[in-house]
Image (cartoon, rainbow, N blue to C red; front, side):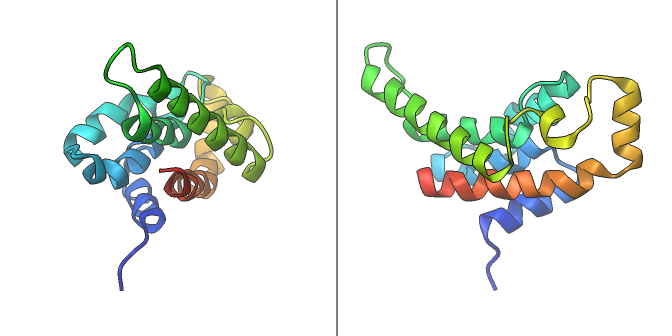
Length: 147
């Protein structure tokens, strides 16, 4: 039986990769992007952009995929820019609807990963292992519909 992209992304995440890596990696080959390069590109976006209390890495990975699909390569291609922005806005709205609010790690997890005490508490409570696979799956499923 073939695994879905969401299953594959969840397995990558549970295997030790960041949420951003898991999301970007499962789409990489569709855009001619080497999976290892995709993993390197996405690495710093995991954990709310490197545990700095910013946007969820699964969301960042999804935005990268949308950029690969719709992004512009010529400055004058304003239509591609607008398509990209529109798709990202749609993705963010749908992600927020699925996850009750803003797509920041602190909001999603209930812990600020940039605070060492809260980060340790989140690890102790296994919050990342419990909640982040859902965000990874949601990001992949939503992006599949958009691209």
